[in-house]
Image (cartoon, rainbow, N blue to C red; front, top):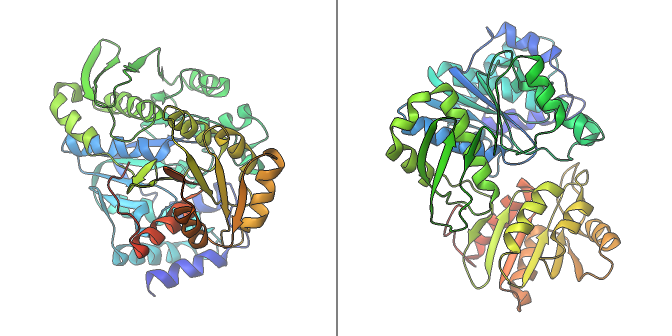
Length: 427
């Protein structure tokens, strides 16, 4: 069976798309031999910033000559993006072989799409004989399939309200789930200056050394985009280049990655040039990714209020007329996103997304109009129609495309097919 057929089968096999819990997948994991993906493992959880933090950690592994791999989710263009060995996505043949092994081991256990594919990813990483693996939690932490693996270092990025139907109604409930990746005695790095209390309590209970941005480690906040920054962690210090990806929060992601990496590889600061070269390579698609000019198009996969606030803070520094093409899944907090972006976006085009969790552009527009009654809001049937309307609108120096991985993928495909702009940077 080819990869496309496997993925189509897995999308429909389990009765629900999300079912948190480790009991079912743990049984299959044990039958597979409990594959540990690498000798050393970083696990990254949080609401926003996970993908960028994984990318920085991966680059640092490569710079230090470590054989490394990553597991992330979701993907933008191809499923293969979720599993990388030495920075390269795995091929279809490798995935199909791993899927077959999971299928044989699961026997009569029903697994969700994410559970099945994550087990396959862990197996692929284990078979690659890696020194180091970086794993991104899909949803929550405590009950996520990735958490079958004991992390040597846990990284917790900023936590906000998202997935409340699964993780709990408030920030403390969500933080408690995220803190589930912490292991006894293993260091935990927080990119927030003031992590939620449940994270602090979990670290104390498990005697896990806790490192907080601004207290135990820090990175200069020089406003210059091209400045050399000073990273400090305890008595160690190193000069590093500013991240190429825009947004102040990328410095939080980089600082957390540097701290976490130094926990497992403390000699890394003896090679500052290699660290600098690694940082200069990190560009992650769909993170304020700039595309073309006249108008400038920014693509961002953010899909919650916390991400929207971060994007708004970046856009607020530039007095530019901005049109927002917004497309979000029906279970995402569109109202919070609208409130956060209201001050920096002068017009909205709401596009529909397909699938069971999708919603029409008209339905999304009504949600935006409800919280922003005076805003200039219109709807489009599809992302393709929305992009066409946005580019033709005129009077705007910038188009922000925001709302989900699906949104960015559709916009990117439209730009590629129409030749309206070209990718000038992956940042």
